[in-house]
Each structure stands twice: as C-alpha cells, then as structure tokens.
Length: 333
Image 1: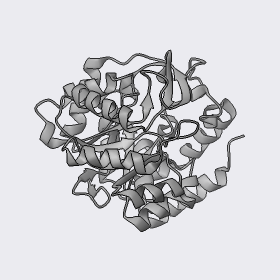
Image 2: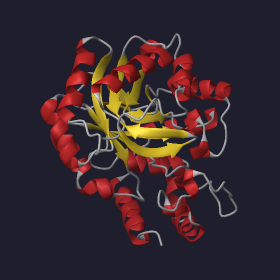
Image 3: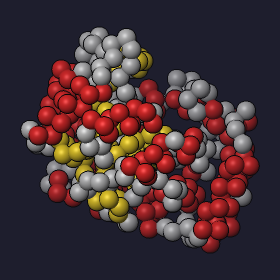
Image 4: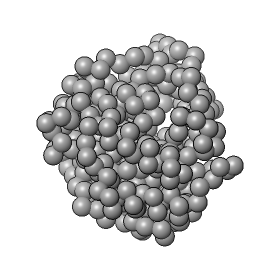
C-alpha cells in the first residue's frame, strides 16, 4: 500500500482510505450491516496497510464510530482515526439540514455543540485523541457560526490534546480560504469521481496550491463504477442511490451508459491484471490534487479489492484515454 503525507501534517496516510459510512447502516443503504462482519472488514483493512479510517457521528448515529472503536482495540498505533462534527441532532441548535432515519439534522458549528460532539466521539471510539477532526458541512444561515469562532474552538480542542489536526468537508473554495486564514487545515474532504469532476475547476487546484490534503468520497459512485451493479439490480425507493438528484447515474438509462463505458476498459483490466474498482480508484488517486481516496466496504472481500488499488500505477497514456472516455460520456440524462 502506497502512503502519502496528509497535507502539511505529520500524518502519513494510505492512498486508499476506508470510509465507514456504510457500516453505520440505516436508510441510505437499504440494508442493515452485520456489526461482526464490519469489525472484521476494518481489521482486514488495517492488515492490508490501510491506516486511515474515516467515520462520523451521523453514520448510524454513533454506530459507525462505536464499530470503528471496537475494531481498532489493540491496534490504535496502526491507524489514523478521522471523524467529524457539525451535524447536530440533540435539539434545534444550528440550521435545519435534513431528516434521516427519523432524526432531524441541523448544521451546527457552534462551539458549545462541537465540544459535546468531540467528547461523545472520543467515548464512542474509545480513544484519548482524534487524529483528524473535520467539520462535516459548513455552517449556514439562519443560525450561522462564523468560521473564526468554529476554528477557535477547534484550536482549543487541539491545544487540550483532544484532537491532533483539523480538516474540513464539503466547503467552497472561499470557505476553504477563510478556514485557512484562521488556522492550519490539513485536509479537505469532498465528493469527486470520474463521473463528477467539478472539483477539478476549483477545490482540487486550490488544495494543491495551499498544500492541503484531499480525501475524495463517492469515487466509486456507491458501487456503480465497480461494474457490479447490473441493469437487473433493484433498490428500495428510499435508498440514496435511487435519488436522481443525488446520483442520476443510477437511473436505468444512465446506468446502461456507464456499464457500456466500463465494458470498454476490459483490455485495461487485463493489462493491469486488476478489477474495474481498482482501475477506477487508481485513476482517481492519480489525478492532479488528489492525495487520498476514501472507499467504503461492507465485507473483507470488498476491502481487499479496494486496497490493492493502492499499489496500482496506470501509464500516462492510459490515464489520458480513461479521461477521454469519461468526458465523451457526457452528462446524465
């Protein structure tokens, strides 16, 4: 497994990181994961050289954090634990964001809620210090907390030894700049895949220029880019993958186009002796500004497949060919 520095921090993180959203279960995924299998998957990831595990309180309302905490017992020195703050459900502090699994979520980056969340995450994870503490979503009106106030709170948590480094997620270029003006930000996490390349226009070059590490999520587009989600696959109506606004590529007509695209790379998977998932992850990790790719996994087999992408180097001509193909694919209908 190849490793890269995470921004300007002292963290040397695996190029392929484990995203722990799916192991929290709940409505987004349409199925309830087995906690024992999730623990075995996380431990297999560590054994394979994946040392960055990314979770959040909102992933199963603490369930994902607790499972990660259980899985890393006796292995704490082998992992970089990343979690988040900012999606608040205890009361109506913050600004309403969404309702999920019966929980009303509010975007809150108020110092009072951040402190509660940090203590709760430390307990869930069973650790004394969070390696990378990230704001999950930026604050927004009407209950908007200035970035300077949020950063001041996070810097105090760092000084108290409760967190080591600060990261952001889902911010605009201007919000990233404002965060950086208030203190050291080592990473930026955002959605990016070969099917959704808008970050190439602003966030990726900005992070590269400022020395900020990047954690891309949904780079496999919730499994679609593995080639294993066929036309016969059915999903529950309330799953995220059936929300056309969230991921229009799962609409049958668009899914067919993606599957045809992937089928055209059979010679590449033969050439590199790899799976489609490995090819896509390796391509993503090779893009300018991308430093680390988050990949979720339900099973040991899936995490083993993802991990092998961390050793895969694609020739420049083939990187260019893949880009030409995805550009030619165009936008979803």
